[in-house]
Image 1 (cartoon, rainbow, N blue to C red):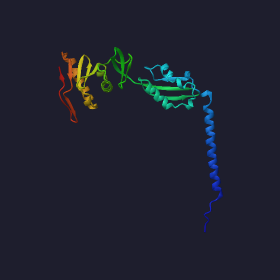
Image 2: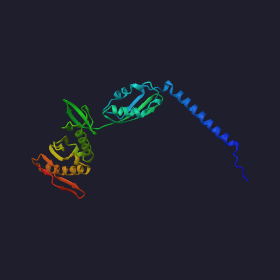
Image 3: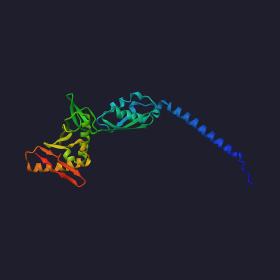
Image 4: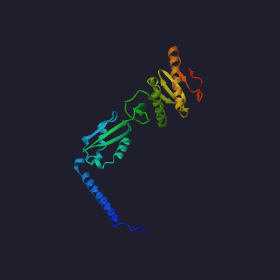
Length: 249
């Protein structure tokens, strides 16, 4: 009959492992404290570099970090700093930060692209591609005729779609507006394009409108008639394609 008695060496080896883990934890904690207390790792504002920015200056971004000057860079919560910078500047879309040893940071910025402008309280404001508004003069000369925030956001998204799908048409756009019926109005190349209501402008409708608008515009240029309005509101789209008529008047 075999003995089931455990060998005494098993408990000894387990005890040694626990002791080793404890020693390593204590040593690691000690080393961490020692390293993070070194002045050589304290953040030097002159060692902060910023890349990817054109609308927001280096000084503005670096100055916004004045509360962490002199802090040990190993103790910095980079994710929190990234979020604070993105939230603090309307022109910044997102931020990525990495440590530059021994005492610096590299900040990579992604900015929002201006979509146009509007006049607010007699001051020119920039409208970004995601509908944010702030004082400024940069960006394309597309005027937002409405000052309603929801409409600005919706028109910004439409302009981004137009820019991506039909850059030639986009380059001729001079202004955008929303009618009292919530319909989109685009001014381009001396013509007034009347589109569907915002709630009906899903992606396929935008793409269909762009295609038909470009055809109508080409015909207008060829015939050189006196038409000023290209009305897309009577066109309907389905899985079978487009139906209805583009009204030119």
